[in-house]
Length: 259
Image (tube, helix red, strand yellow):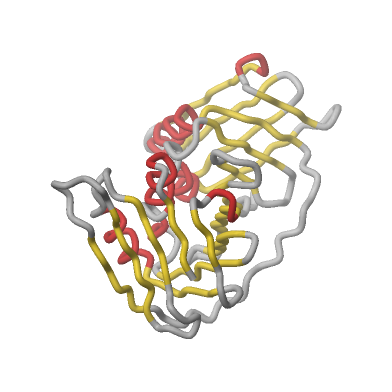
């Protein structure tokens, strides 16, 4: 296996993907499939699912000599290594044999005052079954600026642990409240939403954990916009589209059940 990322913008995205993954899990399986890299993991509380899809065309080189490769790795160690990269470095991931217990990670540069670096990362067996997440039609779909929504979630956290989302054909309302700090409400006009679609006559009222939404919104800088899909009694789907078709970072978060 030999996988390389040389474009600076993509090297940055790849590094950012692993920056906050420790908020969801300590260990991850990275699957290098013929069609591209795929990660799926559930957080420790089994409330949210993290999903990454990078098609093989996203990489500058993507060569799997012996078919699909499953790499189990400690998420914090991988990020610490990636975070040590100089901006002049490109990234190379390789294994000489799919049965190897180490992943070779190389930082390569042609800049004379920056040195190449080579790492061997010990791999681990992580016995986790991938979830089958069925495609479904959602009752409401909207696109918002990622930073804007992330900042709102940070502010809502001061007023409770639950975000209430109210969707209708006229507007999208967000609110949180607690007996200690009071209540915060934001009404977003449909005209101020990048894109919005809702089933005719539909009115949705859903509740989600602000702590988990905060963890998801830690990725708000990875993409300019975020797509949010809602359906009653179903997890919210939050997608950060990356820079190519079928290239995304996606989360599913189970709703809170109102007593």
